[in-house]
Amino acid sequence: MKSVINSAGRRRQHGVALVMALIVLVAMTLAGLAMMRSVDTSSMIAGNLAFKQSAAISADAGVEAAIAWLSARPGGLDNDAGDSGYSASSQASLDLTGNDTPEANDDLDWNDKGNVAQLPVDVAGNQVSYVIHRMCDVAGEFDPAKCSTAPSGAQGIGDNSIGILRPMLTYQPLNNTGVSGTTVALYRITVRVIGPRSNVSFVQAVISQ
Image (cartoon, rainbow, N blue to C red):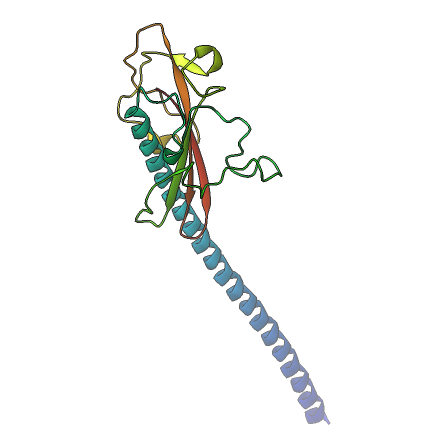
Protein backbone atom coordinates (compact mmCIF):
# COMPACT_ATOMS: atom_id res chain seq x y z
CA MET A 1 0.00 0.00 0.00
CA LYS A 2 2.87 2.39 0.79
CA SER A 3 4.51 1.82 -2.59
CA VAL A 4 1.31 2.82 -4.39
CA ILE A 5 1.06 6.09 -2.44
CA ASN A 6 4.74 6.95 -2.99
CA SER A 7 4.44 6.29 -6.71
CA ALA A 8 1.45 8.63 -7.04
CA GLY A 9 3.31 11.37 -5.12
CA ARG A 10 6.31 11.08 -7.40
CA ARG A 11 4.07 11.41 -10.47
CA ARG A 12 2.55 14.59 -9.02
CA GLN A 13 6.04 15.99 -8.36
CA HIS A 14 7.10 15.23 -11.93
CA GLY A 15 4.05 17.16 -13.19
CA VAL A 16 4.95 20.24 -11.11
CA ALA A 17 8.53 20.17 -12.40
CA LEU A 18 7.26 20.12 -15.98
CA VAL A 19 5.06 23.18 -15.37
CA MET A 20 7.94 25.05 -13.73
CA ALA A 21 10.24 24.17 -16.64
CA LEU A 22 7.68 25.50 -19.13
CA ILE A 23 7.30 28.74 -17.15
CA VAL A 24 11.08 29.23 -17.03
CA LEU A 25 11.33 28.48 -20.77
CA VAL A 26 8.66 31.04 -21.61
CA ALA A 27 10.34 33.67 -19.39
CA MET A 28 13.72 33.05 -21.04
CA THR A 29 12.16 33.28 -24.50
CA LEU A 30 10.52 36.61 -23.67
CA ALA A 31 13.77 37.93 -22.20
CA GLY A 32 15.64 36.91 -25.36
CA LEU A 33 13.09 38.61 -27.59
CA ALA A 34 13.25 41.78 -25.47
CA MET A 35 17.05 41.81 -25.70
CA MET A 36 16.97 41.38 -29.49
CA ARG A 37 14.45 44.20 -29.80
CA SER A 38 16.56 46.43 -27.59
CA VAL A 39 19.63 45.80 -29.74
CA ASP A 40 17.68 46.55 -32.94
CA THR A 41 16.29 49.78 -31.44
CA SER A 42 19.75 50.88 -30.31
CA SER A 43 21.17 50.22 -33.78
CA MET A 44 18.33 52.18 -35.37
CA ILE A 45 18.85 55.12 -33.02
CA ALA A 46 22.60 55.12 -33.71
CA GLY A 47 21.93 55.02 -37.45
CA ASN A 48 19.44 57.89 -37.24
CA LEU A 49 21.91 59.99 -35.26
CA ALA A 50 24.58 59.34 -37.88
CA PHE A 51 22.23 60.39 -40.69
CA LYS A 52 21.22 63.50 -38.71
CA GLN A 53 24.85 64.50 -38.21
CA SER A 54 25.59 63.88 -41.88
CA ALA A 55 22.62 66.03 -42.92
CA ALA A 56 23.75 68.83 -40.58
CA ILE A 57 27.24 68.84 -42.08
CA SER A 58 25.80 68.87 -45.60
CA ALA A 59 23.45 71.73 -44.65
CA ASP A 60 26.47 73.66 -43.42
CA ALA A 61 28.05 73.21 -46.85
CA GLY A 62 24.88 74.64 -48.40
CA VAL A 63 25.05 77.72 -46.18
CA GLU A 64 28.70 78.21 -47.07
CA ALA A 65 27.87 77.95 -50.80
CA ALA A 66 25.15 80.58 -50.39
CA ILE A 67 27.52 82.90 -48.51
CA ALA A 68 30.12 82.49 -51.26
CA TRP A 69 27.50 83.38 -53.90
CA LEU A 70 26.47 86.51 -51.99
CA SER A 71 30.07 87.59 -51.45
CA ALA A 72 30.77 87.28 -55.18
CA ARG A 73 27.90 89.66 -56.06
CA PRO A 74 28.24 92.65 -53.69
CA GLY A 75 26.74 95.07 -56.24
CA GLY A 76 24.22 92.85 -57.94
CA LEU A 77 21.71 91.99 -55.24
CA ASP A 78 18.93 94.44 -56.02
CA ASN A 79 17.06 92.08 -58.35
CA ASP A 80 15.97 88.44 -58.26
CA ALA A 81 18.25 85.72 -59.60
CA GLY A 82 15.95 82.71 -59.52
CA ASP A 83 18.35 80.28 -61.18
CA SER A 84 20.73 80.94 -58.26
CA GLY A 85 17.99 80.63 -55.65
CA TYR A 86 18.09 84.35 -54.84
CA SER A 87 15.17 86.68 -54.14
CA ALA A 88 15.69 90.39 -53.54
CA SER A 89 12.61 90.46 -51.27
CA SER A 90 11.75 88.46 -48.18
CA GLN A 91 8.63 86.80 -49.69
CA ALA A 92 7.11 86.78 -46.22
CA SER A 93 4.05 84.78 -47.28
CA LEU A 94 6.12 81.93 -48.75
CA ASP A 95 6.01 78.68 -46.76
CA LEU A 96 9.58 77.39 -46.99
CA THR A 97 8.98 74.00 -45.35
CA GLY A 98 5.40 73.21 -46.34
CA ASN A 99 4.47 72.81 -42.68
CA ASP A 100 3.43 76.31 -41.64
CA THR A 101 0.06 76.40 -43.37
CA PRO A 102 -2.36 73.70 -44.57
CA GLU A 103 -2.63 75.31 -48.01
CA ALA A 104 -0.17 74.13 -50.63
CA ASN A 105 -0.42 77.12 -52.95
CA ASP A 106 2.05 79.12 -50.84
CA ASP A 107 4.65 76.34 -50.51
CA LEU A 108 8.10 76.72 -52.03
CA ASP A 109 8.69 74.12 -54.74
CA TRP A 110 12.13 72.83 -53.84
CA ASN A 111 12.31 70.90 -57.11
CA ASP A 112 12.00 74.08 -59.19
CA LYS A 113 15.54 74.79 -60.34
CA GLY A 114 14.34 78.13 -61.67
CA ASN A 115 13.92 79.38 -58.10
CA VAL A 116 16.12 77.06 -56.03
CA ALA A 117 19.87 76.52 -56.13
CA GLN A 118 20.85 72.86 -55.95
CA LEU A 119 24.26 71.41 -55.15
CA PRO A 120 25.48 68.07 -56.52
CA VAL A 121 24.68 65.05 -54.36
CA ASP A 122 27.55 64.67 -51.88
CA VAL A 123 29.50 61.54 -50.99
CA ALA A 124 27.10 60.79 -48.12
CA GLY A 125 24.16 60.71 -50.52
CA ASN A 126 22.66 64.02 -49.35
CA GLN A 127 20.95 66.35 -51.81
CA VAL A 128 21.45 69.96 -50.70
CA SER A 129 19.31 72.84 -52.00
CA TYR A 130 19.12 76.43 -50.81
CA VAL A 131 17.33 79.72 -51.31
CA ILE A 132 18.44 83.20 -50.28
CA HIS A 133 16.08 86.05 -49.39
CA ARG A 134 17.12 89.64 -48.92
CA MET A 135 15.11 90.77 -45.91
CA CYS A 136 13.40 93.66 -47.70
CA ASP A 137 9.73 94.25 -48.41
CA VAL A 138 10.32 94.68 -52.15
CA ALA A 139 13.03 94.11 -54.72
CA GLY A 140 14.99 97.00 -56.18
CA GLU A 141 17.56 99.42 -54.88
CA PHE A 142 18.40 98.89 -51.23
CA ASP A 143 16.27 101.10 -48.98
CA PRO A 144 17.01 100.80 -45.23
CA ALA A 145 13.48 101.98 -44.46
CA LYS A 146 12.05 98.89 -46.17
CA CYS A 147 14.62 96.31 -45.11
CA SER A 148 15.96 94.56 -42.05
CA THR A 149 19.46 95.92 -41.55
CA ALA A 150 22.63 95.65 -39.51
CA PRO A 151 25.39 98.21 -38.81
CA SER A 152 28.08 98.31 -41.48
CA GLY A 153 31.60 97.40 -40.41
CA ALA A 154 30.44 95.14 -37.57
CA GLN A 155 33.11 92.86 -36.24
CA GLY A 156 32.64 89.52 -37.95
CA ILE A 157 34.63 86.44 -38.73
CA GLY A 158 35.90 87.16 -42.19
CA ASP A 159 35.74 84.35 -44.69
CA ASN A 160 35.27 81.68 -42.05
CA SER A 161 31.77 81.15 -40.74
CA ILE A 162 31.07 79.16 -37.62
CA GLY A 163 28.88 76.79 -39.60
CA ILE A 164 28.07 73.51 -37.93
CA LEU A 165 28.77 74.92 -34.47
CA ARG A 166 25.50 76.86 -34.57
CA PRO A 167 23.01 75.20 -36.94
CA MET A 168 19.46 76.55 -36.80
CA LEU A 169 20.69 79.78 -35.20
CA THR A 170 22.35 82.68 -37.01
CA TYR A 171 25.79 83.14 -38.46
CA GLN A 172 27.85 86.01 -37.23
CA PRO A 173 28.00 88.93 -39.69
CA LEU A 174 30.67 88.88 -42.35
CA ASN A 175 33.34 91.56 -42.20
CA ASN A 176 31.99 94.56 -44.09
CA THR A 177 34.02 97.25 -45.80
CA GLY A 178 31.24 99.86 -45.94
CA VAL A 179 31.44 103.33 -44.46
CA SER A 180 31.19 103.37 -40.70
CA GLY A 181 27.78 104.48 -39.50
CA THR A 182 25.89 103.15 -42.52
CA THR A 183 23.68 100.08 -42.60
CA VAL A 184 23.68 96.95 -44.72
CA ALA A 185 20.95 94.48 -45.58
CA LEU A 186 20.32 91.16 -43.88
CA TYR A 187 19.98 87.99 -45.90
CA ARG A 188 18.22 84.83 -44.83
CA ILE A 189 19.59 81.55 -46.14
CA THR A 190 17.35 78.48 -46.01
CA VAL A 191 18.87 75.10 -46.75
CA ARG A 192 17.02 71.83 -47.30
CA VAL A 193 18.81 68.49 -47.17
CA ILE A 194 17.28 65.22 -48.39
CA GLY A 195 19.23 62.22 -47.10
CA PRO A 196 19.68 58.77 -48.63
CA ARG A 197 16.82 57.43 -46.50
CA SER A 198 14.51 60.25 -47.63
CA ASN A 199 15.07 62.04 -44.34
CA VAL A 200 14.57 65.80 -44.69
CA SER A 201 16.33 68.51 -42.67
CA PHE A 202 16.06 72.30 -42.80
CA VAL A 203 18.62 74.85 -41.57
CA GLN A 204 18.39 78.63 -41.64
CA ALA A 205 21.07 81.26 -41.19
CA VAL A 206 20.97 85.07 -41.29
CA ILE A 207 24.00 87.08 -42.42
CA SER A 208 24.75 90.71 -43.24
CA GLN A 209 26.31 91.72 -46.53
